[in-house]
Length: 236
Image (cartoon, rainbow, N blue to C red; front, side):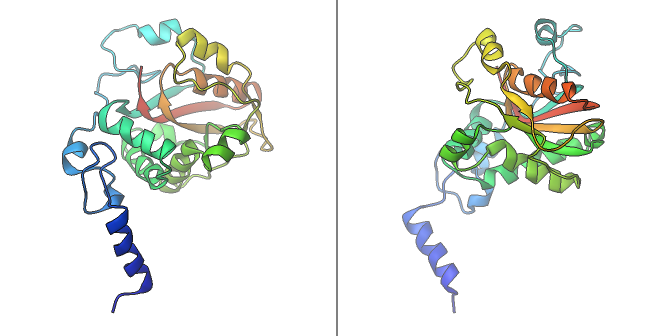
């Protein structure tokens, strides 16, 4: 005899079929988020990356670091922001599929198994959304990822380290210069005294790094010892 919950789940499958976040074909288990084909086409970052900002490069001097004054200790990402990975980020942010945050957290944990210096921190935190945008969306996608990852690496998560000072324009359609200018002064320290502590700062996508760099500047000015950055995706 099926429980009421199982009956509801079966009806949901009929009226709201489980589909791949990328190609939108039916899949057997929504917790997988992608069909087998789209999962196989996930673009993991190559081994040759800048040891500072994490951008794929074979140059001895990273052109991205040369152009930007990054103040975080190191940044690491998992996927290139394209194809299936990009579709998952959009499904998380704009379709409200919050479980994808857990999925990204698990994928990031697998990378940290080989990057254990990034887990030598006091707190895990996330890039905060302004309260207006968080109310509109209903959640902070970076916080969902950060909470999942913090649980896996057994470190405390805090949302009290940083506060979004003002409601900035979306970075999505801005060029590099505009992104840096748009985010200046966007953050302030929250109720947690971060002085002397170390942080693993989480965001969904590293594009120019302007957002995570500005957040890191705010933390360092408050006396934070060091800030590592980790994002689900690295894009341009």
